[in-house]
Length: 381
Image 1 (cartoon, rainbow, N blue to C red):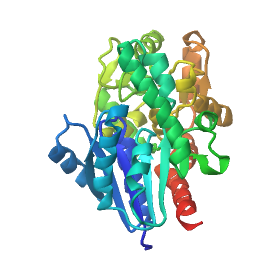
Image 2: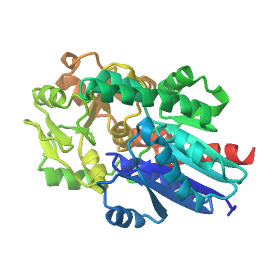
Image 3: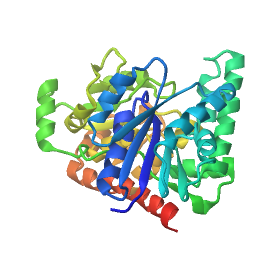
Image 4: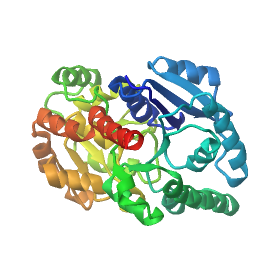
C-alpha cells in the first residue's frame, strides 16, 4: 500500500449522510489506494461531539471533527483557523482532501497554504445549484438581509470552487455544464460522479417476500414507493400520494412526513433496500427548474439498483437520459398520463435485469473507481 492520505470533509446533518458519505468513505478505504483514510466531520454547536463520534467510529475508518461555524463572510477567518488547527495534525505529502460541496473550499485552501507539504490536492465534490436553490425556494423563507448574505456567500463559494480546487466532480452531466458556465473551470479538471447506491441496494426475491409480508401486501397488489430524506419545497410529496393513490395502487412513503392515503414509514437506512425490493414502481417527481435539472437524486440511484422501474416527470435530466437509454421507466409531463395499464407494464419488467444494468452506473464500487482514477490523476501526474 502506498503512503498516501485521504481526508473527506463533510458535515453530519445531511439526510443522506449514511447513504452517501459513510458508504463512499468505507468504499475508498476498502479499495486500498490510501494508507490513511480520515473522515473529518464538521459539527455544529447543537451537536454532541461524543455521540456523533461514537456513532461514526463503528464504520472502520478514522474519524476526527472540527467546529462548524455559520457560512457567512464574518465567520470565514474563524472557520479557516479551526480547519487549519485540525488539518495540521493530519496532512502529509501526497494527500487528497475531498470536500462534499463547495461551501468550505476557500477556507480549506487558505488553511493549507502555509503548510510546507508537497502534493496536497483539493477535490471539490459539487452536489447541486446552491445559489439557484436559494433564489427559487428559500428567498421568502429568510428575511431580506439574511437572504442577501446567503446569496452573496453562495456566489463566492461557487467561484472559489473554480479558482481554488485542483479538480471538481459533479453529480450529473447537466451540473457539470452548469459549473463550467459559472466558474470557467477547464474541462480537463472536471468530471461526473453520480450519487451512489451501496452494495446493499440490489434486487432480492427473498427480501421482496420478507418485506411485503411485513407490509401486509398481497401478491396481486401493486406498491409504488417514494423515498425522501426530507420534505423539500421541490419534492411534491402530497401530489405524489394523492395522484397515485387515486389509481387504486398502494403508496409507500419512506420519509418523516405523515401523509394521508399512504403507508408512512421512516425506517433505518439498513432497511431501505428491503422496502425497495418489496415495491413495484419507484416515483420521482421534481419541479422542472435548474435546481432539479442538474440533480442526481439519491433515491433514484437506490431505486434502480434495487431493480425498480421508475415513473418520473421531466424535472431531472439524468433520469430522462436513463429512461431514454434503458426503457426501464416512463417520463411523463403530468399525472394525467399515468394509468394502471402503464403501471402494470412497467411492473412486469425483469427486476434483476434492471438491477444489473443500474449497478454498472450507480453502484458504490463503480463510482468509487471513478474517484480513484481522479485521485491517481491528482497525485501521480
